[in-house]
Length: 216
Image 1 (cartoon, rainbow, N blue to C red):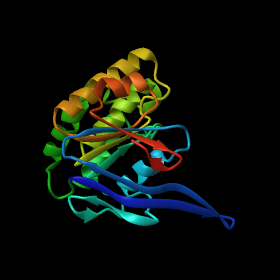
Image 2 (cartoon, rainbow, N blue to C red):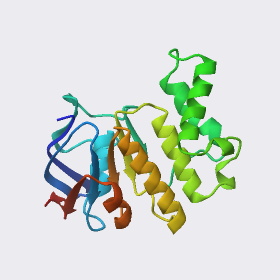
Image 3 (cartoon, one colour):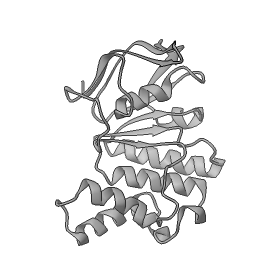
């Protein structure tokens, strides 16, 4: 498998109390597959996404990407969160360029980095807003910039965590169209999302979690 979730457990301890969030979850994802993780609030969806991203360490088991264990964040697993995480004092262009400059330091010239930033902004139809700051654009536009920043890192896997939450119907339609386009390009995508019509429109593989266990 391209991405393998191998019998993972995840628990947290606070004040002497242990909370088990995920229990013996196994999953395989092929290259180019679009996978949606669904379930009730608190079932462990976002925790599983964070484990794939390397933002959280597993308690037991392993996450393997191309047979290499994931135990830390890396640009090959780009994450877009619900809050988009754009730096408010930077422009749209500068937010994407920050990631590009870090990932491609010493590998691309300044001109090549500029061309790559603009190519990814144009891909999500945000090139026209490159000089605006996050406070000057809508929620849906912020999410598209977040996706452009993630794509600009040339990830092997794109991880989307509730990116459509809080968007209006028109913005959701735009987000669905963009995600469908990315999926059609062959990019491996894992999404956690509550907007069911969005999931059903694009997901090829749906994983259901219930109280920390995979039931489908």
